[in-house]
Length: 175
Ligand SMILES: [Zn+2]
Ligand SMILES: [Zn+2]
Image (cartoon, helix red, strand yellow):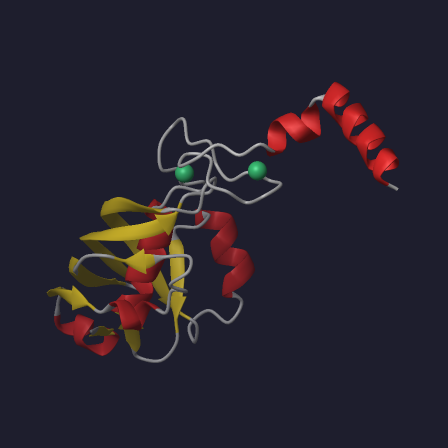
């Protein structure tokens, strides 16, 4: 699904449909799309810019940043974004970023790919450090076990200095 920018000279364009996960190119070990990606948008020409407004819903699976178990996050986001043609503004980078911060995107040629918009909007709506639950205990840094599922003995062995002394003595005796 893409927006033909030339068509916008005739008037605003409304688009509604589904984007396939394969069009987004996410690394499945980082972001997995679990539901349909439904997008509904309107594009209109505003002098040099194209304004695209709409909404997007889907469900995404991300690994918990502590225990790496997959956690499902619903995505339901609304966007209102401006795009400018690269050709019209060869110096775009500096000028546009100063004026409008991150509100502006760029496209080249006559088309704006809807999958590009969707990819960006999904990334913007995801938490930086997803966690499966507030009290997730994470993985043991020593043996890698998921401490939500079972306890391991690493902590006591490595932290308790008295036990460490005992182990040293024991090791010496075996030599
Ligand atoms: Zn977790
Ligand atoms: Zn452990």
